[in-house]
Image (cartoon, rainbow, N blue to C red):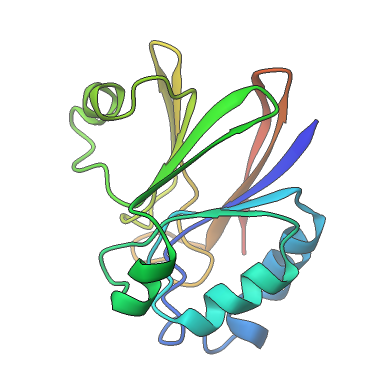
Length: 167
């Protein structure tokens, strides 16, 4: 069994500066507890990437549209890994919600779980064997009533126990 933490759109330091180390305490606790931290872009600072890399057992991450050259030099546009039998891809943008599943299936064949960000709005859907998850943002809630992130477990090719956390 593999425990994942999903976060995105941390926008450090402009949004995460109010939190110790750039993330809220409960999110740092989730970083420490996870086997894999998945970050779907818009870090906005190398400092936060370094902090998360230093604490995470493993990091699977991409850059977002607000990430500069230094972050883009260290992170891919789309990161991929097979974790506990689940083929995972993480990317920042998937376009508008209308037609998202169709576009995701075409853009990410041979993927079981697609983690994305950009909207700061949590999303959980499935289409033809592809699960799409957006954890929202733990630091910039935008139109949401709370800050959010997700945890889940992977086990023998299955995605289990997806939980949306609120702060």
